[in-house]
Image 1 (tube, rainbow, N blue to C red):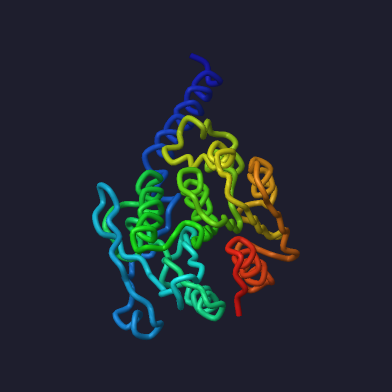
Image 2 (image 1 turned 120 degrees about the vertical axis):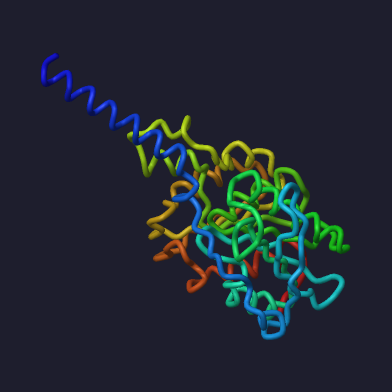
Length: 272
């Protein structure tokens, strides 16, 4: 056998080994869950309640609940992104409180010392369970605004494809994990390799609640073209805002003002 044939066999072997490595280890470089639990003084310091939400096949997962100031006040179901824990979003929670609205911040299985391991099925189940927890607490869907950031945006789309709400807010969403993987690893058949696909592109046409979608034009992690493509799939009332100079993290821009205005519009309430 000639040298060229051995070289081809070697390259093919390395490629197949790489495929195998990606397939069996993909979740270790897809999710970056903080392991530290919610600090012991967190509830008192931030005037919140830690509630245990039952997630099917996982058990009790701790989420953070900021009481609405009245029985008619809007409530945000907040779903954070990858690489962070719900309790780290104090700046968001302080803004929600100053607006006179309540919130339930979803935590994922395997994050912040909660049981389970991160994966699509359990993360989406946790997000849906938190929505159902709000309704079980007596908060009507017309008071609930679902707000998801990045990975949390995929959860928010999932919920609103199955449940009713006053409105949907997405910041820095991706079209699907398949689209992201294709962008990052074009040399692999990612549509076949991916275990967790987060097909927001297939779910968005089923979403009927009003939509606000925000994306930064300098987002290097999830290009704003992905958000725009997802936005086009929504068939109802909607608004797309491109944040000039906005990166993946956008709370330090004018984005909170747009979110506050959307909550007012979606729930027909005037906020402070």
